[in-house]
Image (cartoon, rainbow over all chains, first blue to last red; front, side, top):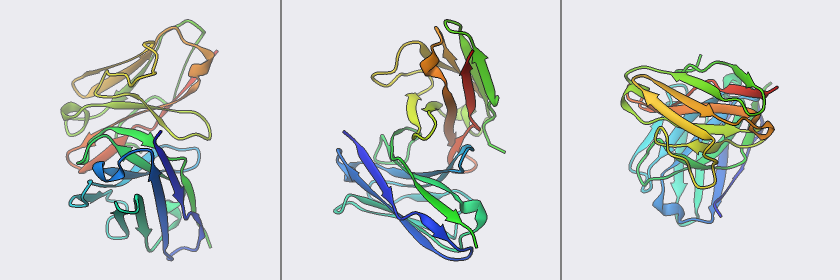
Length: 121
Length: 110
């Protein structure tokens, strides 16, 4: 069974940085592209970033480009999102999501339960 | 404002058919496949329909998807109380170079 467990969320002041992580199990992590998708409590979904299986293609939403860095460690079966210069609009649940392909596709077939990032003074 | 436009709500009585629309443009729905996700309160989204109309294993055939031009639709036939949830459409946007989602449609079973 695919399991994706996010961690690292919490309360952070505006302008500060935070790194969230995702531990994967139940599938060959290194064979799949991965994504981060966020959701403001009670609101819609926003794709944040995606990374191909070998990290040779990493793309970001315009809203986070230049501030967020996505990376992965296939040996550790882990996914990361380094977030800098955080603002109130970054407050959201951050979901770690598995793609169905090695390169970025449109198919997100497994989601973690999310970790909450709250940006507030 | 979401790139893909969905009605905020839809409703029906048990047994009825409910249809949810998802409107986009040539840069997203018009040139890419559409997926649908179902999300219950406090839970992560779950893939419901992929590649416009395909159902993952375990998804009842009461759920069906379609796409035409720059719009897509999700239909739920034989509506059940367990179908009360929020449904999101999603696709790739060639101009934005990323995934885009609809704002979500909350389905209520009356």
